[in-house]
Amino acid sequence: MILTESLSKRFPRVTALDRLTLDIGSGVTGLVGANGAGKSTLIKILLGLSPASEGRAEVLGMDVRAEGPAIRARVGYMPEHDCLPPDVSATEFVVHMARMSGLPSAAARERTADTLRHVGLYEERYRPIGGYSTGMKQRVKLAQALVHDPDLVLLDEPTNGLDPAGRDDMLGLIRRIHTDFGISVLVTSHLLGELERTCDHVVVIDGGSLLQSSSTTDFTRSTAVLAVEVTDSDEHPNGIEALRKALDARGVRTEDGGAGLPGAGRILLLTADGDDTYDLVRDTVAGLGLGLVRMEQRRHHISEVFRHDDR
Amino acid sequence: MTTDSLTPSGSPDRSRPGDGAAPESRIHDIGYRGYDGPRLGRSYARRSLFAQSLRGAFGLGRSARSKIVPVIITAVMALPAVIAVATTMITGSEELPIPYVEYAVGFDMVIALFLAAQAPQAVSLDLRYRTMPLYFSRPIETSDYVRAKYAAMASAVFVLTSLPLVLLYAGALLAKLDFTDQTTGFAQGLAGAAVLSLLHSAVALLVAALTPRRGFGVAAVIAVMTLSFTAVTALQVAAEESGAQGAVNWIGLFSPSSLIYGLQHAFLDAEGPFPGNTGPSTAQGVVYLLAVVALIAGCYALLIRRYRKAGL
Image (cartoon, rainbow over all chains, first blue to last red; front, side, top):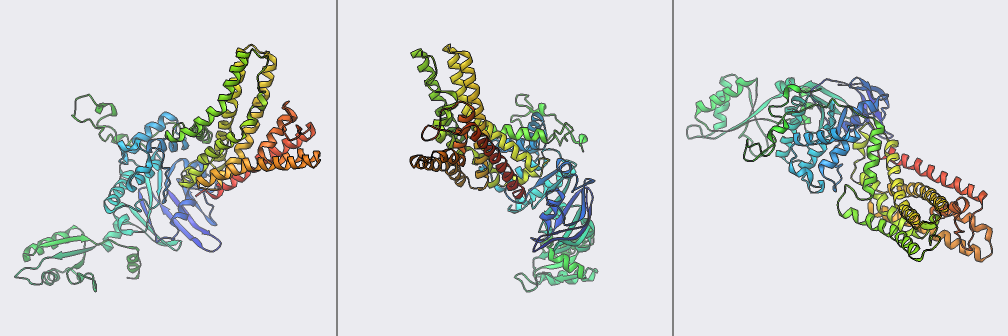
């Protein structure tokens, strides 16, 4: 889908991309990096809107330098910032954008109705966008990127500004874009944790160069950390300690969670080797007669990728 | 990239209200359908943008509030034409009270108001709400956007300025005035209106595109259109009173409105528009024409440059 070869972009004072070489296949790919890591610059180059200083890039097998318009006909783009006029309705706006992508009027209307429904906008689509919540605006932005049935969509920070529930909805929607709609996705974020659950493949860039590129299955296998919290009982006044001993006896390596933070000593961290570990923890806790307060996957942040590299 | 296998457990028609399937009819998830139809190119997108912007200039397809100004201005422009026709018919006069080509002269301020209200509407909103990246992430290019917006604005002004002429012409024919005279006058009027539309829209769009703030845009367009004309007229009066007759016509080169009036005098039989009832000669008119062409080309080039920068 996307191929770059030692792609660089230099501005007078900053190097936004530094000899970036990527090969991104179909599916959902996460592009992770801190703010200023070069994510948006990469997207602009891929859309053929900003020339690279050196190196080359291909999108859908077309060269970005020579075939920008052809690429833009088959690619959808959702910018990071607000980009919606407040005084028109979602329907009017998306129909207009569909026409700008070359869809004839009737098809533009039909595709708009379909797409808005798929992103979860129903009756409100006839009201002016100015009155929408952030979550609804994000959906309209997504709809305009999908309305012309592209082969690939580039989503720049689609979860920005959403509350946790909205974030989960958006991530679920992004997953569906690939599984149900058959459209490949490149999605950027500065949070690795949220992309890990959504993407097939994660690319981490930092300072404009490639830090890590791996499929999320490898990723989670090597880094899935479980956090476990249990209650105490009369028999085991320190439930966590009892659990730790019991798990050690079964050969599971554990460590203290949240050292130095509130709740330290109340949470046990352990590395999961697949589904068996979950069962083992559950059975062990039940065997000790303790209450299992929570057992969750720790979310990863970019910093952990660095730590992971050091290991 | 179609996903036909995912398509309908129920086609869209199946869950229309009234089929009695559910008390509250809902459209169920019919799965994603791909699009295999035609993808028309840039010229189609440009035409669509043109049509949308032209409608927008008269408030069509927009909120009721944005229809007020264009409707009032159009009425103000057209009403005197209706009155002129009515007087001609009642008095049985042999000619219209006002020649076609001079009709717009009295409406300088009204046309400036229309431009001030609609040019920022056409370009500032896309800049202010940062919609430009959505256009330029599609196949259209900067030049397509600028051309569509310019063509739409010029057409809107032409509709505004030619509508009263059409009314006058229709009235004149109904009143059985001389057909040849009226047709010649009408054609000259339309030609003047066309040049005015092209020139004024180019200037107004450029001024409006310089700021994403609509309020500034409105003020700036009014200032450029009317202040330049007021200044030019004041200078011409001063020149005329101090006996520098020759300078009057050259000063006329420095505002969009006086350029148009000068052109109409030189080529379209309009009365002398400048103080002292003079106007440019045919030779001077050629200079006026060149100035108009240069001004339009300059504004277009600057607009393109402006949007290159506003790209993403």
